[in-house]
Structure formats: structure tokens, C-alpha cells
Length: 310
Ligand SMILES: NC(=O)C1=CN([C@@H]2O[C@H](COP(=O)(O)OP(=O)(O)OC[C@H]3O[C@@H](n4cnc5c(N)ncnc54)[C@H](O)[C@@H]3O)[C@@H](O)[C@H]2O)C=CC1
Ligand SMILES: CC/C=C\C[C@H](O)/C=C/C=C\C=C\C=C\C(=O)[C@@H](O)C/C=C\CCC(=O)O
Image 1 (spheres, rainbow, N blue to C red):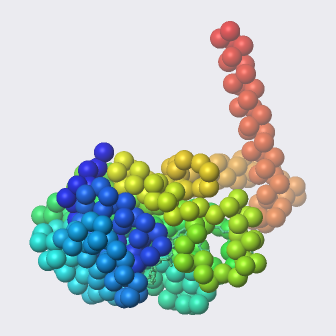
Image 2: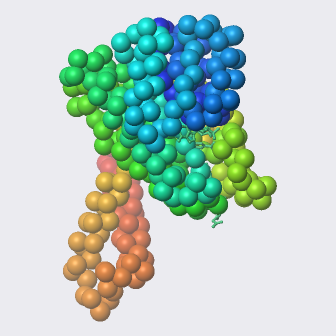
Image 3: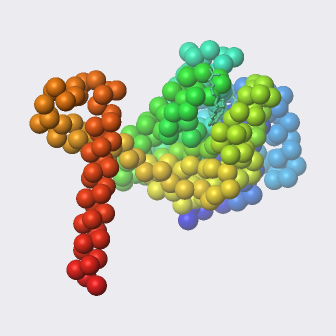
């Protein structure tokens, strides 16, 4: 298990909400945390609260806009200076917005570019190949990064979060870990009761609540976050859903792609008069038929081998 005692951590968007929850849990494990956010007053209030609980030498707040790479570099340097270290051990890319108010360009800038700014810098600074000490990066995405569900605030949020999941899987490889000593992890919570939901109407909240079977509380996400941070393998993506323990989501995209491609190859031998494989609507029932047929064959084979065995 990754021991946080004495480690240095930077968390973006941590004046309140989930970022604050993560910071508190990390501080409880004995680390030093640099809180960062664009909300100055709230950030300073959280800093004050944590200084009281954990001591002035372990908590620091810096204003930082994640869309600006220079800003991210500046707070990285200031955090090192404040904690009197030459490195940071953990970066949590948590800052995010829903995007309705901000518009799609700013939403992608904050939710995606912000993560890329943080990761690019952290990988450069932490990389053992560059003389760094290695470290951990946690990117906060969403269940909407794992599948597409219409939500009331527009497509930009889902687009940004799925890009974060894909990016984290791309860079979170065993090779990166072996070469640079960096673990890259992704957290995908379901809807959680935090200030991000303040922008939703009561009707939107009720609809979402119905769709996801109830909202998570920040402490459940906080617990999952700690499990991921302390035990997650690089490239892993953890989902958090109401009333169940956190679980990992493998990248099944390739498996499904191969399955559907195989079906399409088989369908080449079926006369075009029966169906046109370029037409998705017509194609889909045939695919479903093949998948069901494959399942039946698989069950029969499994059953047959059981008969042979017993
Ligand atoms: N609450 C939820 O239902 C879920 C939230 N998430 C993600 O969790 C992360 C944290 O969100 P919450 O705590 O729920 O919301 P929140 O609104 O309480 O926290 C987000 C923080 O990011 C900060 N922020 C916004 N733009 C920024 C920028 N340009 N630079 C730096 N900081 C900036 C905000 O000031 C805010 O403090 C976000 O990435 C969000 O997308 C993921 C799944 C579910
Ligand atoms: C905006 C949400 C902010 C954070 C969300 C979090 O990351 C995860 C949310 C996960 C699922 C939400 C699903 C919600 C579904 C609904 O509310 C839909 O029933 C709404 C249906 C259509 C909205 C489309 C429209 O109004 O144009």
C-alpha cells in the first residue's frame, strides 16, 4: 500500500466539494497538501480550517487556474517552496465544471486541457528518467466518461470526461510506470452531492436522482479515492456507484470491437439482398441475432463439457 505519511500532494479545484474531501483524507494520512482553486475566498477558508486541524506546515492554498499551464507550473514551484521540498509526490487533477454556464470551449479547457496541463507537468517533474522521484497522478473523470447518458447540462461535459478516461488509459501504461515510476489513475464517480449540482434545477436533480438510483455523498467518493490512490494499478479506472463498494472498469472497447468486426466479416457471406451491412439500422438486428446465436453455442459447449466431465 502507498504510504502517504510525509508525502507532498497538490490538488486542483480543492477549495470545496470533492477536492476538499480528498485533501482532508490525505491530510489524515500524514501528508502535506497544497490546495488550489480559482475561488480565492473559499480556498482561504478551507486552508484556515485545515491549518487548525493539521498544522500550518502541512497545508497551503494557492490560487490556480488549471487552463493556464504557466499558472500550474507556478503553484507547483510555490508548493515545493512552501513545503521545503524539491518534488511533489501526488497530483490530483480534480478541477471541473458542468459546462452549461461556461460554454463548450471553456468546459473542454477546464475539464480536459486542465488535466493535460497538470499531467504533462507532473510527468516531466516526477519522471525518474528525468531525474525525478516518480509519483502518482489521479485524474477525476465521471461515470459519464465511461458511457454516454444524456444529462441536462450538455454534451461538452461527457465529451471532456470520456477524453480524460481515454487519455489516462493511453499514458497509464506499465512502460510509463517502469520508465518514469509514475502511476496514473482515474476516478469515475456517479452523481455526488457537491456544489457542482448548484447549477441544476430541482426538476433536473430529481430526474438525475431517478436515473442513477440516488446521489452519492462526498465521503463515499473520498473512501473510494483513497483505495484507488493507495492500491490502484497504473492505468486503472475506478467507478463509484451508490450503495456498492468501488470497482474497477476494464477497457472492454477493443473486445466489443473485435466481436462486432467478426460479425461483420461473417455477414459478408450473406447476400446483399438479405441486408445491407453499411446500413446500421438494418445491420443491428442481424448482429444481435449472431451474438445471441454465439451465446447459445457457447452455453451448449459449456453444458456439453460439463456432461463429459461429470
Ligand atoms: N459532483 C458530481 O456529481 C461529480 C463530480 N465529478 C467531478 O469531480 C470534480 C470535482 O467536482 P465537485 O467537487 O463535484 O464540484 P465543485 O464545483 O464543488 O468543485 C469543482 C472545483 O473546481 C474549481 N474550478 C473550476 N474551474 C476551475 C479552473 N479553471 N481552475 C481551477 N479550479 C477550477 C471550482 O472553483 C470548484 O471549487 C470535477 O472534475 C467533476 O466533474 C465527477 C463525477 C460526479
Ligand atoms: C451535469 C452533471 C454533473 C455531474 C454529473 C456526474 O459527473 C455524473 C452524472 C451521471 C449521470 C447523469 C445522468 C442524468 C440523466 C438525466 O437527468 C436525464 O434523464 C436527463 C435527460 C435528458 C436531458 C437532456 C436535455 O435536457 O436536453
